[in-house]
Length: 395
Image (cartoon, rainbow, N blue to C red):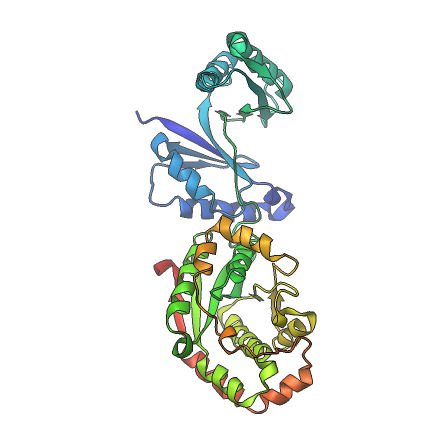
């Protein structure tokens, strides 16, 4: 018979949802089954406040890697299901602890029990004592000591109604809400560091994030296009089923460059992007736009300029990074695996025509006067007609 392991999955924020809780739990279970697809020999159960998986032992390392990409999971542990027999649990703990004592003179440890089955005759502290004392009886002379607050090794026990799980590992999850529980949003994705992080953060708030990229291959070549494909694929592994909308932007950008005031270029580019992205969002059922803007990071991200671009669309604009500094954003980009792609040298479609002195406190009536010089609505309609739609799952 194939040896098995039990995966205990915990969530925290979902547990506060009251009467909507079952909806969020269903979304999370669905997402877990998606990331673990391809392995048929997995059995699922969902006692209140937990999700249990019964998996083959050989699948445990891969299961751990995949679960770390699922928003909504607070933490998870891979352990062994057994009867709530103190001698058997202590014997298992001794088996796990002995190899660690071989490489050290002392080891601080403790036992922590969660007793969701309240009819179990022993309380959690009593279980801790019963198991811990049995382990200490065998290993105290080998340097094992009890230290609850500074334990280097923690043996955890979960006593439930149907099974008891023993484990010595607790892996952190992404936390947040499960993707699909908060609706669809559309992220303006560039090849830079910020927008992929912004997209990831919205996925962790339960949104399915779709992407729009404003392409300018005649000026920039294919490098930016390929970067965005790679970034969209990396973010999509946290959610699946995303679409990428590639909008040809060279004609709009050329018209602004040739006919509008130089200092207004960047803000005008952004206003046109917001207009086009807003139309795509409404037509595709997305309820908000998402950007990677951070207040004051560059000239186009002052309060005045952000207000000047936001006002061209009626759809909500979310800026998850608005109060973050660059170092914090870079740290998060490295954590989610987008940083190395983002720093590959490739100018974006705004910076290629960066003016010498971009406006930092734009006036909307001056911007509107500039826009009257170009047939922006026709250019926008043409760009949407030539838009490429890519299913990111197929990349």
